[in-house]
Image (cartoon, rainbow, N blue to C red; front, side, top):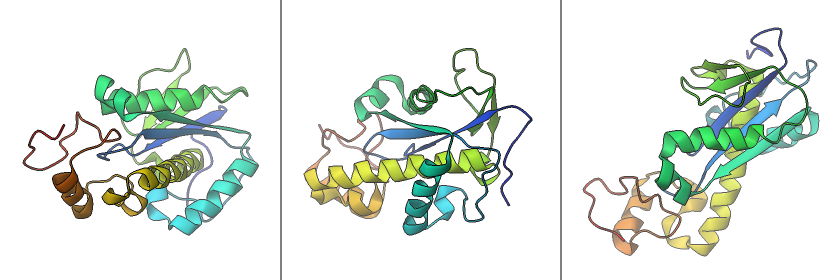
Length: 197
């Protein structure tokens, strides 16, 4: 059972999706939930079916006091590295929270400080706290929609099903057709990487 809060402060939960992908952006979300929020289905987005995530996305967006989604492009990832890109995506999501808050709950063990706001890093936080789990759902559903759209432009890579993760089909397509503009050039796209671009 997820806990609603970590402290007695007003908390915003943050999480990202797509860090381990070979293609597409990294996407983060920040969510400020009301004290009255309760949902028995909500969990780490990786533990939920696509249908459940989409149902929860609607509930979270309707019931949250405020939420934001931040996106960092593959080109930016290549420039600043994936760890910094994940933090930047979270900062862009937090920028959209206009209501007052006092503490950021960050999924994971590292974070670049956001302005003068205190933060708490929590390993596997998306399986412990509702605001982080809610952020994990919004980040994942937003990113899946982006990858579905990109798969229309580049249908050969199976992004509508693998979301840019390094599946066999995705790597086989990179081997056969090369990388495209949405691939992260700083990542090892193939196990025995040849020059692809």
